[in-house]
Image 1 (cartoon, rainbow, N blue to C red):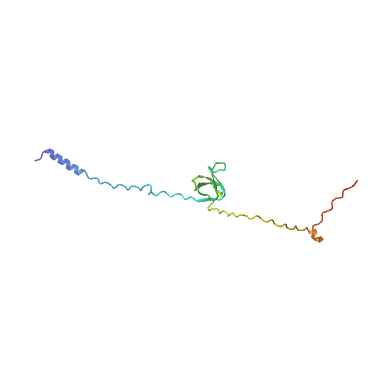
Image 2 (tube, rainbow, N blue to C red):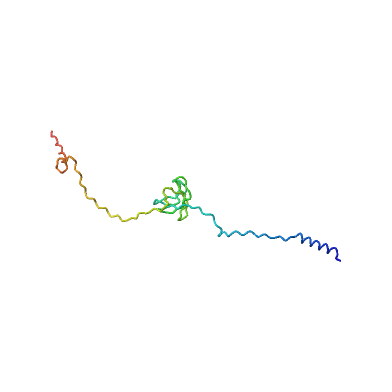
Length: 156
């Protein structure tokens, strides 16, 4: 026969085993993809415009009293970021500078530059005959009418 302590210990072991159910671990959620593989939100499409004048001031704010950031040359490429009245906020593609320009000086297409050729000096035109007044034609003289004779000085 078994001592009572052994029974009690065995009973505790049975209860523990019956009450303790193995816990099933849930699968961990998948890890997010690395930052490089993560799709970035689509970048807003900004129209590319071209400077349509020889020199255009890029300004800090949309006003002619604002200081200049830089001067843009003919056909410089810019991205239009916004518009305020007659001013466009742009980012210069060449150097990334941001500022304001007057909208009417921007073009959706590059401006064609006329080819400069050496101009030949103009030849002087031969003098043209002056048409005769109608009175000379009627007289048949074929020349200009004679000027009136000078006044005769009076002797006293």
